[in-house]
Amino acid sequence: MKFRLSRFFSSDIGIDLGTANCLVYVKDQGVVLNEPSVVSISDDGDVKVGTEAKRMLGRCPVNIRAIRPMKAGVIADFEVTEEMLRYFITKAKGFMKPYQRFFRPNVVIAIPSGITEVESRAVQDSAMRAGAGKVTTIPEPMASAIGVGLPVSEPTGSMIVDIGGGTTEVAVLSLAGIVEMRSCRVGGDEMDSSIIQHMKRVYNLLIGERMAEDIKIRIGSAYQVPDLEESMEVKGRDLVSGLPKSIRVSSQEIRTALQEPIASIVDAVRSTLEHCPPELASDLMDRGIMLAGGGAMIRGLDRLISEEINLPVLVADDPLNAVVKGTGWILQNLNSNVRV
Image (cartoon, rainbow, N blue to C red; front, side):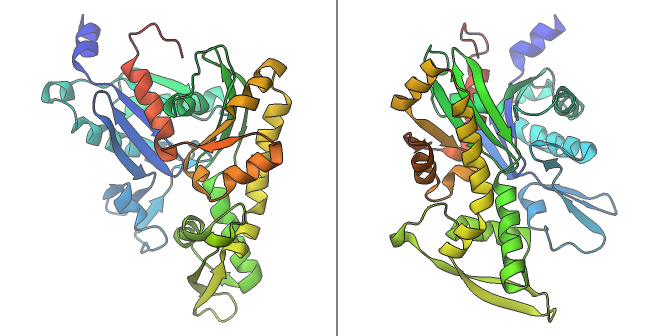
């Protein structure tokens, strides 16, 4: 009886527990939170989560630690992840009706398809300790495909490439299941790391993660588009003199720096297609491939993949929210006959 009451009165939550960002969907409310997956902890016990904590990355005094508890889509620090989830669940309750806040919400969490059973259980346990009721996990590529509107339940092939902060999920789906998939631990973080290494190697310039991310977003590209070639000023510390230094870098340089992680993503797409059943492969000739996730917004990536594998490639209308919207669709249809 207690379970039925809580099921009736509580509001369900969908979470995209990403390496770079955590997005939260509240049933009947939509996407209510999108904050960085960062936690700062001071020696006196003060904890900050999300946007406020991200501002501290690379700028913390000795008594404060800024931590990214998710690495490559899995939990690297259990206690900090639990604290982060508690913050997001509590904040999401503020968007619920007053009587719903007294019950533990049921939660659907999207997780990388390549993680182990132990890693999946760790996510569920952390969510339950953080205040969730029943916790259900769903593979990220399935959630992403649903979120962008692919017909995953039909007996035809659909292909999704979800490029997140820590992982890239590539999957061919049909009849509400994953037929073939690859998960590689390459994503936005690996791209940032490649930019940092390029600056060290070419200019003896040390830059932080936030600067590398800014470079990637502003002038990063995977394919040369003459009209969109740009440059920007980059500031950091000279490794030779130890003094602050600024240089100017171009889109072409950053494209060179990003070649290795982008090549890994293309290889994952190619490998998935090579092992795809022929009937579904023929469907993809017409339907093409859908790109989602923050990494899909790298300029020219769709064109590069299309030329490499000779298939049409499209970028989702709202790639950043694809996964969390998929969890939201599942929440809205939990009592329907639709199988996912």
